[in-house]
Image (cartoon, rainbow, N blue to C red; front, side, top):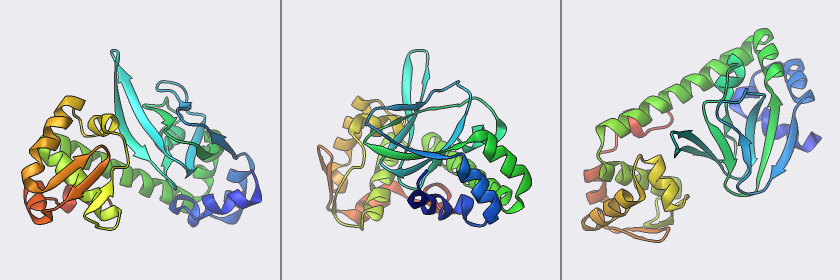
Length: 232
């Protein structure tokens, strides 16, 4: 791994407070690789050999069962994945593939576990990261179980509108097929939900979104930090 790649790891919360010697031990065996779009990075059920860190690009985590596939989440710059499997030396519960050309840092899971045992600051950071991910899963399950498909779509649009600068017009970050999967819908159900949002001032053409009645959309979505705030 090049020296220029090291700051991308050190700046992450997971590695920020650990001792210099522990960090040096981790990056000694790490390496960076550029992957083309649609490249499978890990396979569900395989042993976890590396912690992956997204430096550039977009990665989809997905799962399969009985000839069905679902998108679990989309990861972007700065995200890590398969941390729990790496720490527990357990099989991957999800597969991962690139959605565009991506630059990925790979840290050997064996080195990660050894440093976890030795460096208390790093161990605390791992616990905090896993707690954050656990709470994210709980919020996701609450959204799926407590909200209708229209409400889930409404909240997703409000979230991305805020992330992209609160403009009335913005572009969806994923294609509709993957969006439907992430929201727990079929593509047909997503199309019906999009039509149902028109009275609330939502116009979606392809991946382009326009929100003309933000107050009406918020009244429908009823966002709450106990589901929608990723920081809490």
